[in-house]
Length: 116
Image (tube, rainbow, N blue to C red; front, side, top):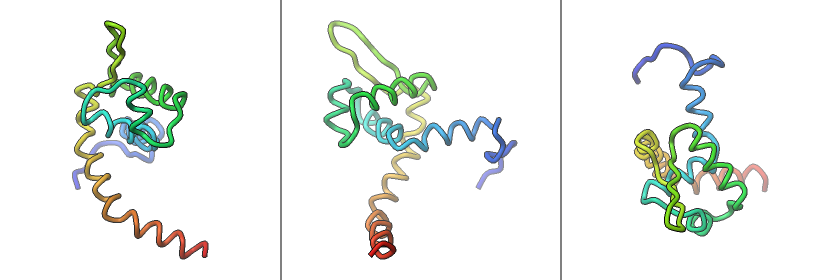
């Protein structure tokens, strides 16, 4: 693993901010959805099960504010797409998604064994 100056344990470390951004569950799901293609708000609501319109709007605005998502409005249509910076997260999110597919059942089984 490569060493970087600063520490994610320090409050003013830029890496810590980046980790906090992607630690939000809806942020990662929205970024992953947009990694396929630009989408309209309603398309994202339909694609992402369990997210409310309000939470999706807040998430998209937050991701726009960090420079990860662009909002393109025109001709009666508004689309959301990843920026160049947002696209740099596609591969890491794909790796996490693969891990989730491979180990999600084990995590769920562990939780059930602790509560049952």
